[in-house]
Image (tube, rainbow over all chains, first blue to last red; front, side):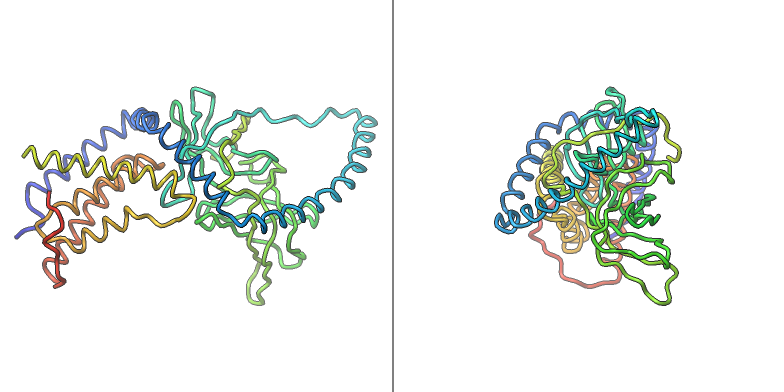
Amino acid sequence: MKIFTKKRIMVLCLLAFSFLLINAFFKNSLKNFVYSKSESLMASLWNNGANQSFSGKNQEELNKKLIEENQKLLSDLADFQKIKEENNFLRNSLDLGLEKNFDLMIGRIISKDILSDFLLINIGSNSGVKKGFPVIISGKVLLGKVIDVYPSYSRVMLITQKNNLIDVEIPDSEIFALSKGAGGLNLALDMVARDKELKNSSLIVTSALGGNYPAGLLMGKVRNAKKIDNEAYQTAEIEKVFDLNAINNVFVIKIAEIYND
Amino acid sequence: MIKEIVKTLALFIGMYYLFIFESSYLSFFTFFSFLLLFVLVVNLLEEPQGRLGLFSAFFFGLLLDIYSAHYIGLIALSFLISSLLLKFILFKYVRIPSFSWIPKI
């Protein structure tokens, strides 16, 4: 018995040729068509999954964690009130305008790739989405960026996608570093200078250095900081501040220029 | 011939709904792909002359292509060629028992 028969090789060549034609002329419209046919089913399954996974968590543990976070936020709020007053006074004195708000578009998550960290959302080029636009959730938490745009849908590469590099900074200790996606919804912090002191639980935000994202979007918190003797840089894990299970809607930021695509 | 086409269509429709279920609902609970496991098991245990493994590998690859950022056909053809190679290696060099009760296309 032969496995590679003439007929099979012919079929393979024909398939390859037809795929080439499809990719050259109908790739985006074909994908858009398939997504539009499966959108309602996928969106309802996504909602069901989100609800069930959320209710399945240990409620008591969740409550305890929320109370602790609430207390911390209240104390932070008191500090921020003072800073806000100072800030307003300085802005008025220096005649500066208010910080420009983002121009946002709202989208709904339809599905997540099985083998990698990509999301499909239900807004596309018809709504003005372009490749490279950052995607956030409420609280200015960065989720990723648009890497593929179809007429009514877009594909978002999450910050956790393997080898996705983002310039970040830790504002409280003035450290500039790189966030590196590790795949499987995990993130690592890399290229932290050895002479800097990396504290666990410090907040990490995006830096304007890379040119891909606006500065100041929240990425996560430092966890398990490591300084190994024979390594040139310090590393750490990044504790994400978003829980994919609890997200249904996302915001796409319209930015004027994309420096690095 | 018609029977074969109906079986192939049924396989594709079944895999399509399973894929949708995996990429939307199951993505909250597991990173594991049951479809990938199905394709692997069928390809390993099927009789060498069977075509279920080839079709399932091709369809799974095609669905991955469509629902990801890849070019359409890239993973589909890679999986199909891998499946053919696996069958060739298993038939020529490896002696593992195959299961005749696996449905044929």
